[in-house]
Length: 389
Image 1 (cartoon, helix red, strand yellow):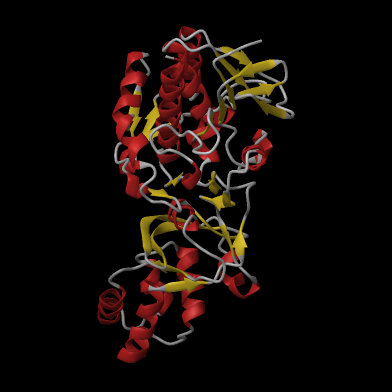
Image 2 (image 1 turned 45 degrees about the vertical axis):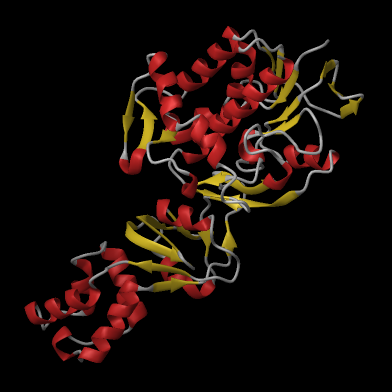
């Protein structure tokens, strides 16, 4: 059964690549081992799919080559995908920090992409194992299907309960493509027993500035029974490396705040001052960590300043992450040095492409990874069509 291209993986990147190539006249076979397409799309954004971000730009992505994403993102931008959403009559809204969500259900995005595939005459085979991939005489064989072009769009191993695997890396290595060591990203961090004080306030969240090395994100942090989570922590987790410390700014103007509290309520204790700006249970845990057990009016300036340092730079040394099971995406992947940034084609294997999460390009939290899926998928889809033209 001959096709112009076989696309492995019916996630966001694979679906849009298939639709793009199919509508340009290519005969496309889209294969996925799952029983329905777009399973990660369906669970994203609390079921409403944070499908892109208004603020998308290359600086919002991690990669061994920070310039690699520029071409695809510029040639199919967030505005292009938003235009497709609006063309299909899907109502949307913007949340904080440029995040765009469906008003209704994430199913609308999947139905839109499947509909675009149908418009392009794409054949979709679900519940189909990929198995061994043959390659001879410039043609790829997957099962009984043969094509001169093959697209790796099988994602990364994050969220294995959804059927995610490292299949993309197996295929890449089959064709001698280098793989940048994959790791969980946008993932909660775990803390050791020495931080037990903060495990005891599991469920408490507050706005912070979270920092690791030279990266900082201002969003909410959540204390959990295992460690730290919440948007700010997920963001910095993509940059964190084992052994590094994470610093949280809980009260930016802590020195001024504590001095003001000492003037206003000299008979109160530190916890009372902290509780004016922080959740009660967090204020109690911080007061215990700071360890000043006397009335505010009796606390010297030097002691007050040391307490303020804790509030402006509360440091933790995570023991690790909660792994792929809790990671929203995978960092690392197929080395961008192996690929054309314009077409996503492998430089040394004619007709082979890699797109989406399979590639060493990882976005921030907030719709950026979907935009990379759309942009890289369209780049490959256009290249497939051009190659048969």
